[in-house]
Image (cartoon, rainbow, N blue to C red; front, side):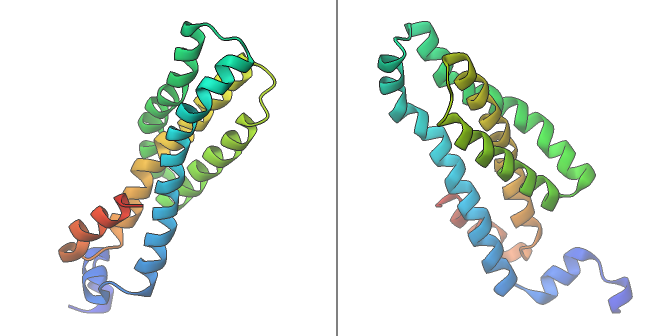
Length: 155
């Protein structure tokens, strides 16, 4: 097979697993870890926030659920957008959304603002998970794909 006729998958198979894939695994793994921290973060902060703002149980439940509502929307939207515009752009966009709105959540002046910011953070998280996984899988040789996809989840 000539280089001109080689498919992307054939090229990945020929190149194998190397420095590029290791760097990509670290980047994707850190994205995976940051998303896990975003999901867990509110569970630790929720009792303090509820006490500080004197939230009702319904408000507390809404705040705890907000990130998951955003994740649902993000998972539905970002996979398609990444297919259309590229996984690299999708990955960078979802990480940026996750980071910006996660940081802004720390400075939320009110309950309503915090719910909106946590939902937007979830929108980024919901996109990062499938896009992160897909972009890493695309650059792995097929015989190593299962092993390294499990490793990325360990982040």
